[in-house]
Length: 357
Ligand code: PMV
Image 1 (cartoon, rainbow, N blue to C red):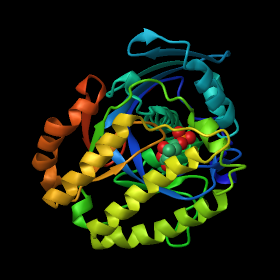
Image 2 (cartoon, rainbow, N blue to C red; image 1 turned 45 degrees about the vertical axis):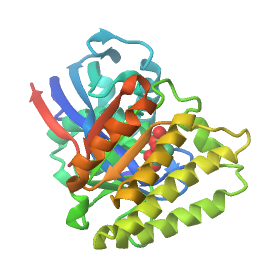
Image 3 (cartoon, protein in one colour; image 1 turned 30 degrees about the vertical axis):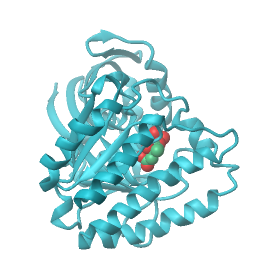
């Protein structure tokens, strides 16, 4: 942790404007359960997405008093301010220079706000990258130091956000099979078979409402969960299997592992105290139809879920036409306002602009 403390506040610019885009991600082996502060109970691995991202710009103006002004989609916003302030208080020790500025933050998502798609991974990582950019400028951080610390502070904003800093795959949490993996920040991973390089993710928006259980509450329920230690062991084993599957391109095993992970995540919620069912009847219909379609047509498409009712369909690029016709013919009826989002595995965040004075 010591390596992430910025001890010198010399060389920081008197003003700056930095803007980044950072994507959302979808976990294949899920993180569910954490220890304070924001340390994962088990390691996880996700595909970084391409089209679902947050674009954030921070304008820094040196000042004797610290302040934040936030705009979401061009409108002044106060509802997310609290979350950002909590985040800033957590990173204060590591980024003390921040508090010498007046900050104006502009942020927007490419995906609809009320889509049920968590924007915390893309939002917190985009914010972190903008912050870290001025530190890189002032302290000449190397590329790898830059991304490592960006991932570290993203994690303090939202656990899964630390994986979004890297494409095409982010791994977060200590695991013997992945060298460099650890609980404090994510690492990038790309030792994968070409079939996974442009893997597709079509997100079926079953329920665009706010999640009924926040992930903070969900993670907490794992603390006294009767199956938690079994689950953590299983996630560790699944990562060993997934490493092999990703390298061999064995799609049958991929499907089995990814679907089992998604259903296990939901089983954890269904067996916690209190218990929750986050799937909707339409979630189950989509799963059933997808399994039928896969069997009848021999198409390697599988489902995964995050902590909500929406369904992600994962499949190889060459099956795109096939799967999208199936979605249009058979699945859109189960989506709220027939909405779905076409995404794919991406290469991680992009620096849009930086200007220092
Ligand atoms: O990063 P959080 O606290 O929003 O938790 C994310 C949890 C899951 O999306 C369900 C799983 C994961 O690993 O992304």
